Image (cartoon, rainbow, N blue to C red; front, side):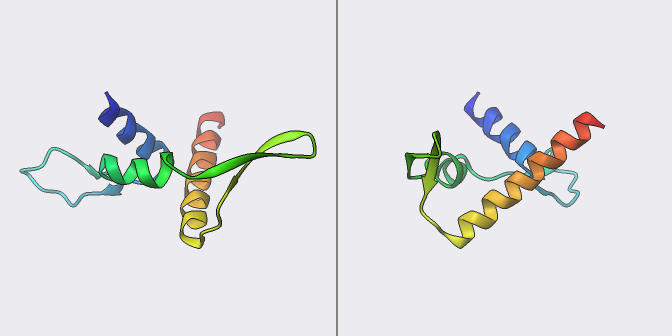
Length: 85
């Protein structure tokens, strides 16, 4: 169940790559390994603080992580636009 959940999340976030066609393979997409997905997405160090009366999650700045999260945000926004239209 965790494997299916991680692949489903990766599809929604736009993190999978399309495989080349191969008659021996039944998978069309290449996802990340569960360990990679867990450490890059789920296990992020941060702290919760207050900013203007609301809770905010502060993460350490890392340019590669920012690019990854921006890519995920764009993919999720595109998914929402497709569902609305």
